[in-house]
Image (cartoon, rainbow, N blue to C red; front, side):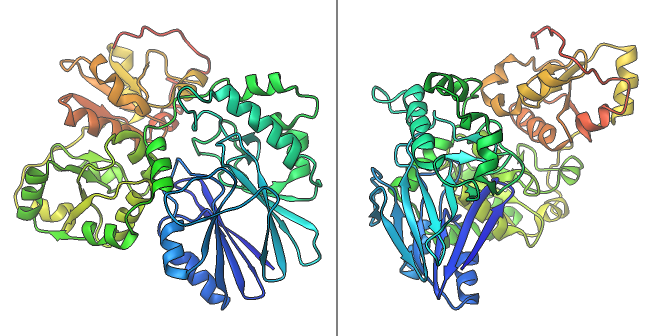
Length: 470
């Protein structure tokens, strides 16, 4: 028996490969399915099942394409109603894979169809659970992503989750390995550990939601407190996972069109497309296409695309470093942005050589900013999340979270000059590019962000009441 975790850091997502005696299972695959197929080929194994723990909201799963390519059977837990052929397992149903078995445990709460898969080894002993978003290390799945108007509240779902944990998961032995669907960085939970696997016994001891003496009322209150608004693309991805989607080959065919500068400009105007610049932020600030938006593919690319671009069907033209074209298209597709329509052939250098207009983003470093703040009053925007800002921030900085920039745009005065920072410099460039595209032109970026600023005398270690006027 082989069990391998295939972890994707950008999405903080874990897929799994299980193999026994020539048969294999893939759990919660990503959209670009080639790595799973190649992994099975390396073992000369046939993929028998594709197990989905639930209808994912934070990414588009690869189950449909993988099933078409391999003939494997898609499996969901009880109550799932996908718009395509799949096996809807019963609670307690046993799936045989080579010399091992997998037991389906219906664990509603994160969503109503959420299920945990219990792997038993060749001797029939409980070995590991694949919990999806039901149980994380240090946390449990948030219960507010599958609310149905007039039917379920997040408190209802939290109650189901309490029962699922107590009745299906906590009775299992302490030595059972927990393989969750996500690690720290995912928006599917609040307090996830950086670890991506652990023992159930440790979770019983240290996970706040698994306290043995916790009442259902206490559990509901704790797991529903402090939930921030989920990214806008979550329900759209969940619907794609339920209803079906275009094959990744079709998405690539549309997106991997090399366009000359002239063709790029024509498509931009004719399709009313968004121009997305995916280069490194240090390169972007030196020169970029006026009106383009920066989200660097080297950072948390897909989640920020999902959070900041409201329309999944919006045509997207992109600029990237040569050789990264397919990576950009695939990572857009992972979160449901299937309408890439081409890229600038030759990258930004081609744009420069053609003599087209360019824009730049001025910068001052942390030391220069510290000196400046001693002599004059400046408008400093901290685009980190509210939780980061409340923990520690520069005196006088105004919190303007990137997550909600589209909602809060009207708060800014287009006539003022703003200095923009985040933690390290990635998010501040995203924010500045969006603001510039909306007509807020007088912006200065702080490279290195708060990490660099913390090495100056600007650092403040406690929360300070701020004037919220921007």
